[in-house]
Image 1: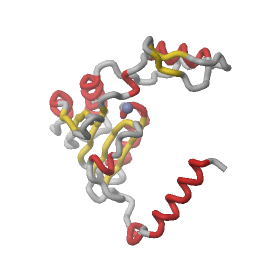
Image 2: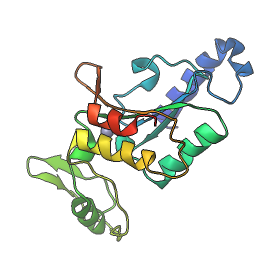
Image 3: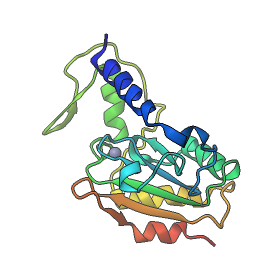
Image 4: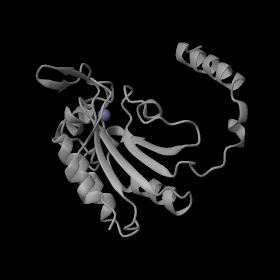
Length: 192
Ligand code: ZN
């Protein structure tokens, strides 16, 4: 049996023991806000933003980027579940800063196995049955503050997003745990 699977199921058994009243929580987030952020394993929004179960929506993907899927979730978050303020939080040392679309397209074209990152960038250690991914925009990041502004703007300009929802733009610093505002993003995202 997988070691990870064992560990996860053991941790869950322990979690259930102290589950308490959380089974009575309603679906809508009690603190009425949502966070869009990166899937990076070093980021724990529950800890860095002080969330308990039932408090807020956390929408995560590679980079914390905004795309059709993110918008879909945010619209449901507000329209059906009542969130009234949103955060876009990217972070320092993000893996999305390490490649471009052409790079990941050619890596995938050559092999589907995990690639390695060397001093000259990403490379494959195997040539093992690639596939064409050129139709996919992986939303890499070249400018961290710029990507926060761009993503806040994408949400702000979506016609299905009410103008009264403020959208705050932040960068999480993986070295210190600090949330650092991107003022240009918060300005773009302010409620009107
Ligand atoms: Zn990241």
